[in-house]
Length: 497
Image 1: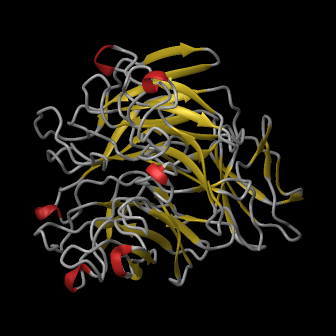
Image 2 (image 1 turned 90 degrees about the horizontal axis):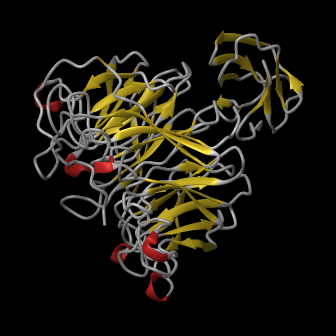
C-alpha cells in the first residue's frame, strides 16, 4: 500500500493565509509521558501534513502540508509552529500561474548551512511530464517565508533528470544536496522508475542513477524515501518496488559520485517474513547499523523494523501486529530516529489500541514499547494516521504530524514528552579544523563554554537557540558540549576528518 499523499479534505474557500489562532490544546497525561495536540489543520491554512518537522536555528519547527492553503486543494503549504504551539502559515503553493512555484509537497524541509530551508514538491513547476502535469520542483524558503524556485524537474527530454520528488533532501559533507525522485530517469519509458540526484545550492542538478537499469528492475524502482549519508561517506536509501525477489523493494548504497550497489532485496524469506515495501528511508544509529521500517511483510504481514549493516547483512528485529488486536501498530510508513537515550522512535500508520496508528520506541536490539495510540478521542480529535516520523526538539520533547484527525479531520501537529532532557545539535555534523559550525539548542543565552570532544572553542551566542563557532585546533571526533544553565551534549558525535 502506498501512502495517501494527495487527498482532498473538507470544503473551504480560498482566503489569505497568515497567523492562525490556536485551537484548544488537548493534553493527555499517561504514565511518565504527556501527549499534546498543538494544532489542528482545517484546509484554509493547509491540510494533511505527510512529512515530519524540522527544528530551525531560530528554535521554531517547520513543515509542509500536501493539501490546502490560500489557493485551494491540493496545492499545499509551508508552515511554522513554535514548540508551544503558535502556528503561522508561511507560504501557499500554486500562487503562480500553472503552479509554476510547485504543488503538493509531501517532503519535509532541511535547513542548510546557508540558513535557507530546502524542500521539494511532487508536482507543479514549469515543465510537463508524460502525464501532462508539472513534474515537481526543488525550492528554498527563508525562515520568514520568502520562497525561491531552485530547480524544475523534467527539464530534459523524457524527464531523464527525474520526475515527482516525494522525499526531502539531505546536505552532504561536500555541501551539495542529495535526493531521489519517485519517477523519471532514463528507464521505464514513458514515466521512468525513479532517480538519485545531487544538486548544488545554486540549482545545478546531476542525475547520479536511474533505477531499473538492470533487467527485471532487480536494482529496485520507485524510491519514495530520501537518503542518509553514513559515517563512511556513502549514501543509503530504499526503493518501494523492484528487487531480486519481485516487486517488494530494496536497500541500496550509492557513492557521492554515483557508483550504485543494491545491498538487499526484500521478500528473500518465505512469506516475506523479512519485510516488504520499504516506503521509509534509513537512519544510522550510533552502533553503526542502519535501521528502517517496511510497510508490509514480517511474521504477521503488517510491517517490520529491521537493521542492516553498511555492507548489506539484514536482520528483522520486530514484526508488527505481534500483539492481539495489533495494539502494537500496523504499517509503519515513516523513517525512524535515534533519540538521545539511544532508543529508536517511530510511528505506524494504523493499528494501535484505537486503530488510528501509534508512536513507538524500540531498542536497537528489538524491544518495542507503544508510547501512544491515536484516535483516543471521539472523531480522532487527537490526530490519526501518522505518515511522518517524529522529530526530537533540542528541548528533549518529540514533535510530529498526523495526516488525518485533529479537530477538523485534516491532520494535526502534536508533541510527546517522555521525560528526556535538553541537548544540542550541530550544523553541519562534521567539519575540518577551522570550519564554521552552528549549534542549535534551547536556553543557550549566557553560555560560558563550548568544547569539541574536550577541546575549547571560541564562540558567539547569537540567540537563545543559536551559537556560532569554529572547529578548534586539536579537536577530534566526539561530543560537542555547551555549558549554559546546565551542560548540554550533542545528540550525535561531531566528526573531524
